[in-house]
Every structure is written in C-alpha cells, then in structure tokens.
Image (cartoon, rainbow, N blue to C red):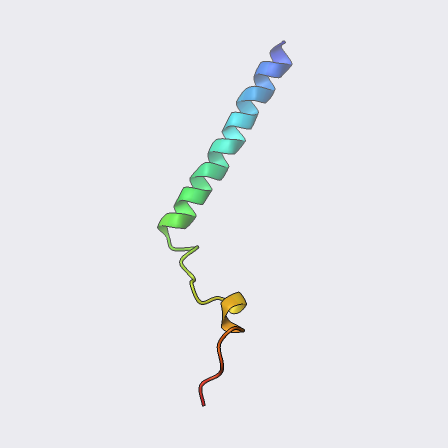
Length: 47
C-alpha cells in the first residue's frame, strides 16, 4: 500500500512539473508562431 501512495505522489509531482513547463512556455510565446514551415508552403514566393 505504501508503494501505491508513493507512486501516486510521484506521478502528481511529474504532472505538476509538465503543467508548469507548459504554462511557462505559453506565457513566453513558444506557441505564437502562426506562419510556420507547414503554412509557408501554401503561399507563393514574392518576387
């Protein structure tokens, strides 16, 4: 039973770290690229 409780707290800790990293990346503009390489191929090059 002690192992299950330990693993539960470890998984909550890891999930919290990933949530913090995601929120930090969103606030710093990591996902603000609206004109990435995937969209760039759809437009013609300007001469």
